[in-house]
Image (cartoon, rainbow, N blue to C red; front, side):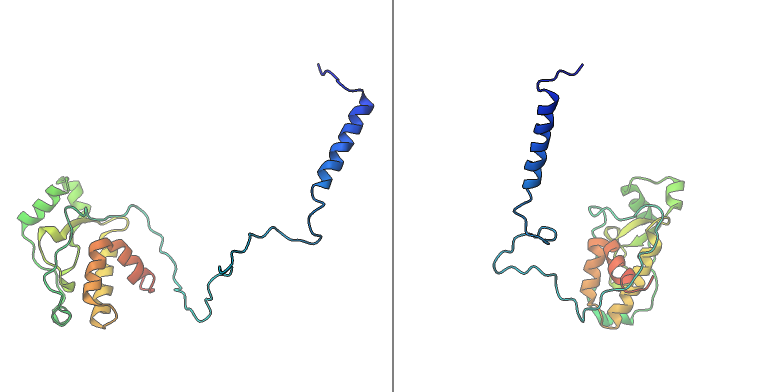
Length: 196
């Protein structure tokens, strides 16, 4: 049940009064004014950067299914044998032999030595031999063969070696990029340069 405090005629007058008050709130606005603009701070530019003449990368991010396989940085910080670009680029492309004992130790450190896990991973050098990496436990990790892992990492190694040997990327830059995040190196040197 609704209780009326005012007679119906008075309620109508109150309602009309509210309409007048509400409509009067916008009276100070300038006619034709668009959306509100933020205040300008003296000395601060309000325009975006001038991108004329800047060539932005033109690439399509590949569709990836599955997870991202990255090494545990505590177990695999990376290990370098040489930073000599001439020596690296004159080497024949090949993967160094890694003893069964070292392979078993790497899988053991990563916590899974089951046959199914070993079959879903391939031991990889974080910094590859072809970029001056060492074939030691500190440079090895089990890269997953599904999702984003082993195959993308091998592609990154190959493209980085080409760039290093062509003089486009310093060897030490390539080595540091792989040690800090091979996935970021893949995005930067493979995907963004259109090698995918």
